[in-house]
Structure formats: structure tokens, C-alpha cells
Amino acid sequence: MNARESRLGRRSFLKLGALAGAIGATNALGANEAIRPASEAELKEAYPGSLKIKTICTHCSVGCGVIAEVKDGVWLRQEVAQDHPISAGGHCCKGADLIDKYRSTNRLKYPMEKVGGKWKKVEWNAALDKVAGKLKELREAHGPDSVMFLGSAKVSNEQSYYIRKFAAFFGTNNIDHQARI
Ligand code: SF4
Image (tube, rainbow, N blue to C red; front, side, top):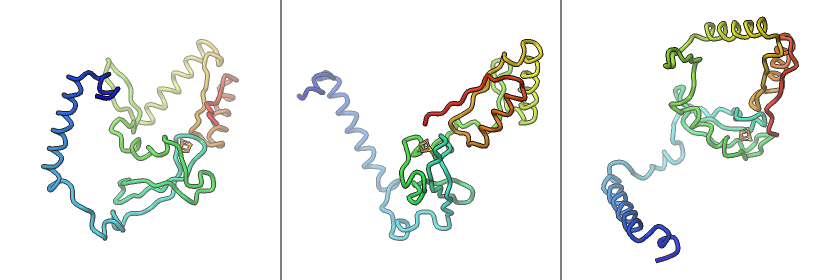
């Protein structure tokens, strides 16, 4: 028994071994139906007719290059953009996970409001009116410095300019960025 086995304890180790064996057996049984070797054509072109769209990672303002493979409006897989002038064929782990965030069932696709303890979908205009109304209320009741605006590492220079301008029109200098670079 090695050091790791002795840490786990003999009984736990045997249980884990049995579980691994069961999983292996299940996989072997299902292999013929669920898994098959890819054909030559599939290896060459897994998604015939798909589009390889050059885009950027939106997780931070570095904007590393990503190739998004899309078919029938569905994002199927991603590659690093080798010829991107900034990232030059590399990106960090957040960028590598870009497609999974896009496909996540937890992804927020529209404004939500918690009403009576339950989340409900809200129309964009209604959400904007509500936020604008609350901001106005706060400014009238407590002055413009009762609010602070935070930027984002995900916004571009131009978007940062708009956020800064908005804070200035609101009447406060309470603004900060959220840069990581
Ligand atoms: S550094 Fe990472 S998070 Fe930022 S753009 Fe590149 S891949 Fe995305």
C-alpha cells in the first residue's frame, strides 16, 4: 500500500477500486453503441458547412482572439486564433472556457427581477425604467454622491468613456474602474 492508499484507509481504497471497476465495465458495455471511431471525412471536417468566425474573448479587456465555429446559429466549438495580433495564439483559462459560459444553462439572457422571493423575466425597457427611476430617487433623496459607478474589465475604451460621462452627468465623481491588467 502506498502513502496515498494509507491516507485513504484500506476500506475506502477498496470501495473506490470497486467503483472504478464498475464504471469501467459500464463504459465497455456501452462503448459499441455510444462510441465509434471518427471517419476520415469527420476528422477532416467535423461539422460540414460550419462557419469559423473570428471573434474576441469578452472576459477581459485584453480581447484575445478566438475562432468560434458556428453552424445553423449554434456555437459548436472554439479554437484559439493563432494569428491574432494581441494574443498570438494563446489565451488564459477564462478564454478557453468561453464556449461553456455561452452554452451554460445558468447564463443570464434577459433582465430578471425578484418579486415575492421569486425571479421573473422583465422586459429591457421596463428594467431600464426601473433602474433609472431608482437612481433618480436616490439622487433626489440623498444627493448624487450617494451612488458609486463601477466600470468593468470587460468594457472597451469607448464604453469606459460612456460610463465616465454618465457618472459626470449624474453629478458625481464616485467612479472607479475594475481593471486587472
Ligand atoms: S486574457 Fe483571458 S480573459 Fe482576458 S481576453 Fe484573453 S482569454 Fe479572455
